[in-house]
Length: 232
Image 1 (cartoon, helix red, strand yellow):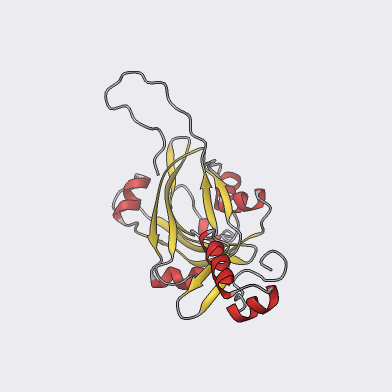
Image 2: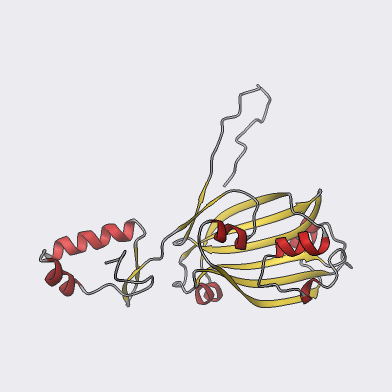
């Protein structure tokens, strides 16, 4: 039913309906539904019922835009710009971008979707001085492409931190998840030829997005303080 009849976020039939359809006991239905919830195929909303979860999208840990990432995986990306202005950056973004207190920055807030379903809420900060007129561009497209094609700024490296947190009321509404639902948070600073050009925080639905990494063991050199090269 999940694969052929029910669309993502559709309610699952009641236990009584499933018992009648599949000619099994109620205990069997509860066990099967519980297993599907544990596997992430279904999700429960307290007081409302059980619903079909959208298929998770797996991402490799590499530097690419949301638009490029989704298209490469066969999904149709779309973006809604929630806000875009030129202002003073807050201290964390200012430090990440190497800006002085008097320097201006662009703040771009967007809702990113895949196949019409909300995937991520994103807040980006970019330095204004090297990117004149950026807010006049089509910000529903890839900002990475705009930086490369219109300004000659190709993002070629990044530093990223990832953690988990529960959805606050704002992001629960934007991402269509229950309050406190698990989110994956990515905070990334991207560079073009060594200069920081973007500082972005993205909140992804953990039920629809997962990260795949390939790790290699670094030969032990005996150096003090040596540790793993990948951190999550």
